[in-house]
Length: 248
Image (tube, rainbow, N blue to C red; front, side):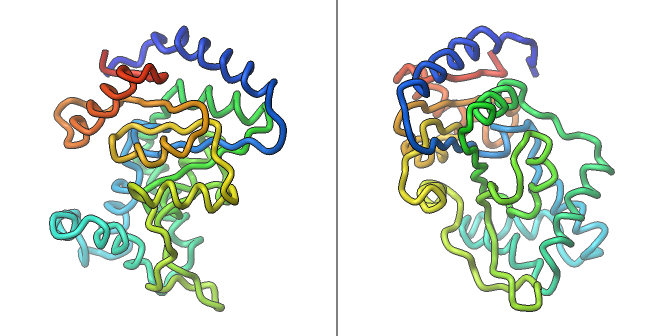
């Protein structure tokens, strides 16, 4: 994987354009980023689930259980990843994620995104992460790139009065068009000034942006997501959107 500083020149160009844009704006400004493949190279949600299978659920579930559900119905599979935590506390799942990071020591942040998020936050742009992973599972990783729990929009089920996770779904499901619905709900309908993603399925999120739409290609060519990343990368080039190709 090519992670050399090839991204610095195009990022500097984008930062300059953002600076000029913000100087002409008033009122609150927002930005939104997908998580896996956009903020970091890892599939954090999968890593946390595998850790849970081994250390929490003790063989009750395996990755194949998720894959079977995904093949049948992607949306139901994503909900299931949150629902299996029913009866536990959100803090427990966040601790699972911390333990996963500690055990694996494998979190690899995408440098162009990290620098961009820092730049935006320094200019009072409110930055959200919008992910199809279970929200609690990405809290520690998101903190590493500067995004707190209150700014993570992910797959969740509701928490009851005792603080326990239930199987009641918290709409919308933050995948495809649900990502767009979630960010606009968070911003009370104000369009973000920048959105970034790494898959063609993120186009719904990107299309909510009123100004900057950004694409990233980050996974290895032998991974299943690579074709969907290629689709978004081709669209970015066609429409002259800023993009960062870690496989150029």
